[in-house]
Image (cartoon, rainbow, N blue to C red; front, top):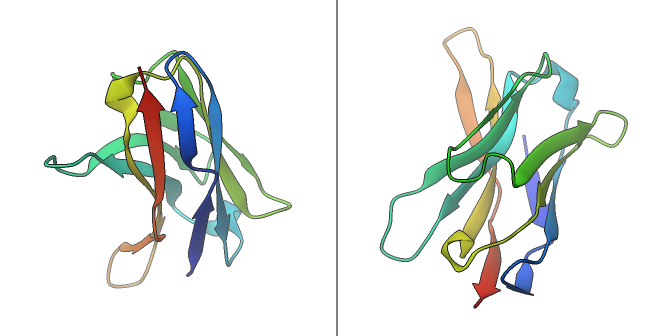
Amino acid sequence: VQLQASGGGLVQAGGSRRLSCSVSRSISSIMATGWYRQAPGKQRELVAIITGGGSTNYADSVKGRFTISRDNTKNTVYLQMNSLKPEDTAVYYCYAAVAMVSGPVSYWGQGTQVTVSS
C-alpha cells in the first residue's frame, strides 16, 4: 500500500487548510486510514482516523476544528483543518492500517509540512 500526502503549506492562525492522502488501493477495504502529526521535539501523535466502516476518532486538541473524510471513488482521505493554531504546526503523516492474516500492518505516507503563523 502506498500513500501520497499533499496539501501542506503556510497558513495564518485562524485560517484553514485541507490535506489529501491518495491511497494506492481501495480504502473501503482498509481497516483504518487517517492522519498523525509530529511537531519538532515531540512524539508523533494521532490527529484523526476513519475506519473502513466510516467511524471517526479525533485527538481532543483538534475536536470541533478538524474533520476527516474520504472519497471511496478516488481512494482519497481528506483532513479539513479549520481555526488553525500555531500549535498545529507539524509534519502531518497519512496512515493506513491493513488487516493481514498475521495481524494489522501499518503504512505511512511521506508527510506534509503544515506551518501556522501567529
